Length: 361
Image (tube, rainbow, N blue to C red; front, top):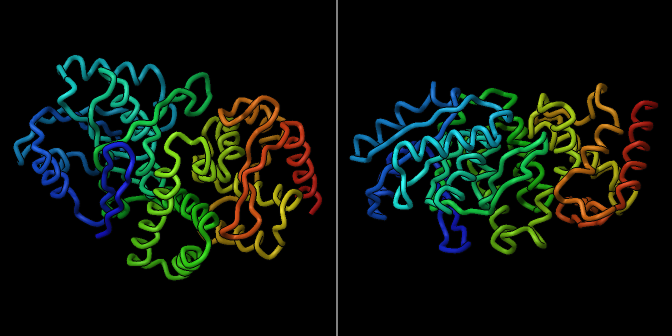
């Protein structure tokens, strides 16, 4: 079992291990929690794990209510947020009560946003159930909903009181969803470099549980370094957006047919292509990172039905845009990335140049 301390505001722990349901009950007893609990989850997680999770809390004497939404990015909207708020009002939740987000990134986002805004903030615990949400959403307090097709355009920075990263949930995760989590792990290995990058490469060769637990821990610890130094993303936390600006645009253009992890993988590969025009990255490094993504089972090329024009227009609405420029995280080498403001039109030219190169190669 690993433990990562996130020192933001009052601070909280991320617990990483197996069979953590009992740990959640013990934590609540330790903080002498006596209020109501709202478990927010989706239909997929509910069918697999809700009864066991619910029964464990009830058997320990807690008053538990459940709210279920359908799975998928389309649920992360104002209408669903209003339904959750209505559920909390109907069940007479107060600031003394608690929300538990049991699910992947969508559940974590909308449940965290509800917790941050209901009665101006009630406590919540994050229980991520996908590899992607474990290494991405478990640290940092970001939560948001989508409006007018723009991903995460309304949101807050609001920290949980604890996060329980139970690796048992990965046993029922399909290969595609698992690969999506590996996209974020590989991204972090490019940022951190060194031993972490070597262990990720080792895992993709061995695929053993012990190494998986270690790279999950190192990913969370790596992200923790960025977010504790820069909670509101005004400086170094921006590095965590490596691959995301183009990735979010690809998600949007595909109507979210392409998942977040797949889009980040494609976006990271596009950043590698752009980096060769703007940094000192060499072809060997570029191919090494690209091959890690492929080995993890991830796509790396923009699908043929998405045009540069479509992607460019989506980037224009990205929340990280500043006037006529957008900040991109570019790669000099593994473990050596830079933040560079690039003119929107220049980004379009670079994307078009790489698209033309790919079509001719």
